[in-house]
Image 1 (cartoon, one colour):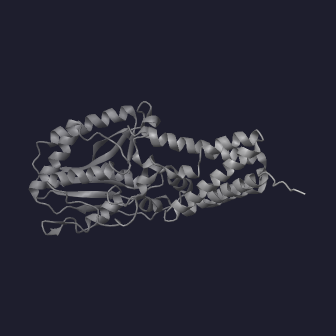
Image 2 (spheres, rainbow, N blue to C red):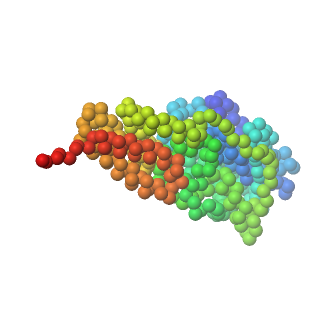
Image 3 (cartoon, rainbow, N blue to C red):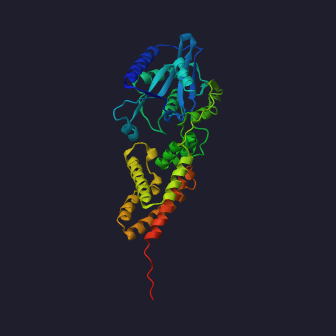
Length: 380
């Protein structure tokens, strides 16, 4: 949902320009020709553009106004950028762009742009215009990004609902699907991004997707919303249209994933077991750490640690020490956890994508259990 990342110098200049524009715009009284609309930008192939983008457009030819208010900017040069992003402390903010600059950027990126004009009275158009400018001028447009709860789409929804004086814009479609199921198709043609998000997201994304947090979800809902006994945004106008293009990669696909796991199974040496289990255990520690460390609630309560289990590191230790008793016990323990994990996954969207990892782990663990099981003594 994030659209713009800026250098520190650019952030300062953009902030000054947005602040200046906002202050100047506060004195403008919109004419009867003015229109306000929600802009929905199509998905891209970069990680920050996989979910599309939402913005608000204010257009008034009489006052020479045609501006796009964009709540998706952040400073890539923020000190400790990666830790802050992981922690959930990274600050995002709104900027205002000329419509021509905004549309040229998306034309350059070959991303479609649609517009839905809001059917509201002139007084509310003026109020929304003022709310947007006050937000920019006061700094209220700065916010701490949250993947589901606070992003460019939710910020647009909030300021429009604030202007209308009631919660008019709510989610009308796909409310019977979980957040995970809604997100899953956005990673098509980006296999390892899909795998990575599948295993790092915890139980929150398995809740029913009742919040508007994705641009295309907002676009679909706007078509169905009524305000004052009339459609709020009855028409969808395409401003830019591009056929979706998908990246091709010799490695970022399911085939490299299956081949890699297949080679591990075929090789099937002791050192392979060490590397595999150590990697899975370290990932489990990382998931547990992020669940406690990060303010992104999507990372908490991650049941995928049943597969990426830190006790696999202890198993590696006893396996290396040739301690057959504990190797056997820990192998059985992790096999039981895999069975529980499989039951948990039965109705989850990411079952099939993690199933090869689950089967590989089970195969190696069964081997270790069989090899290290004490033989039953035969009494003659």
